[in-house]
Image 1 (cartoon, helix red, strand yellow):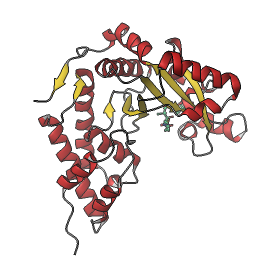
Image 2: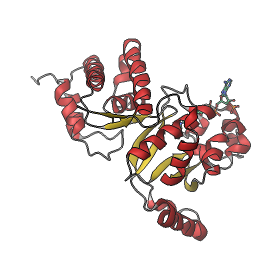
Image 3: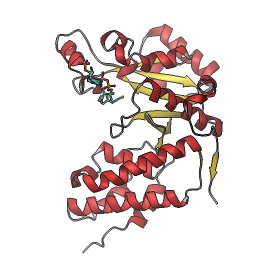
Length: 289
Ligand SMILES: CC(C)(COP(=O)(O)OP(=O)(O)OC[C@H]1O[C@@H](n2cnc3c(N)ncnc32)[C@H](O)[C@@H]1OP(=O)(O)O)[C@@H](O)C(=O)NCCC(=O)NCCS
C-alpha cells in the first residue's frame, strides 16, 4: 500500500519547481504526490491542509524574500479569502485541473504575488509576437524591445484572478499598477510588465466601452501593444458578455488577444505619481529574520 502524502514533502516539491515556471506548471514530483491519494476526498483534504500550512508559514514569515508592504497587504487579503473559501467550497475545487485552485496554491506558495486587481509572476515577452502583424510591427517590436524595454525578459506578467474581482475596475487597476511599481523598485532586474488579453484589443473600446480603460490607461503612459493571436468560441471575451457573444455569432466580432508591455521606467513613473491612491507606505521592506 502506498504511504499517504504529507504536506511537508509537497511543499518541498513545490520549492523544487524552477523559479520562472508559470503558476500552473506542475512537476512530475507534485503530480506523483497527489496520485498517491486514493480518493478525490483525500486530494481535497491534502490540498486544504497544504494551503493552511503554507498560509501559516507565510504568517510566520519563513519565506526568505522581500516584498513591498503594499503587496504584503494584498497577500493578507488573499489568504483571508482562501481560508474562508476552504470551509465553503466542494471537494472538486481542490482538483489540480481547477485553475482557480492553482492560483490559490500559487498565491500561498508565493509563486503568484497578489497586487489587487491582478496577480503577478515572472515571465517574458514571446519573440514570436514580432512576427504576427507585418513588417512595421516587426520593426516597432524590436525597436521597443531594444531601446525601451532593453530585452524580452524578465518581466512581471499579470493574471486576472476570477476568485477576487473586487478591484477589477478603473480605480482598482490604478492601485494595482502602483503596487507593481513598488515591486519594480525593489527588483531592478525586472524590465517591466506584460499582460496578454482580448481586452487589449483596440476593438473593445467600441464594443465594450466600459472596458476601454484597460487599454487606454497603460497606452496613455507609453505602454506598447502587440498582436498575439485570434481566439475562438472559448475565448474569455465571450464568457460573460451577451453583447460580445451576439456580435461574435453575427460575425461582427472576433476576439483578438494582444500583449500589453509597459517598460519599467514608465510604469515606475506612473506608480510614483499615483502613490496617493494607496494608503500603505510606498516601499517598506519586509525582510525575513
Ligand atoms: C474579464 C472580466 C472579469 C471583465 O468583467 P467586467 O468588468 O464585468 O466586464 P465585461 O464587459 O466582461 O462584463 C460582462 C457583462 O456584464 C455586464 N456588467 C458588468 N458590470 C455590471 C454591473 N455592475 N451590473 C450589471 N451588469 C454588469 C456588462 O454589461 C457585460 O455585459 P454586456 O457586454 O452584454 O453589456 C470578465 O469578462 C470575465 O470574467 N471574463 C472571463 C475570463 C477572462 O476573460 N479573463 C481574462 C482572460 S485574459
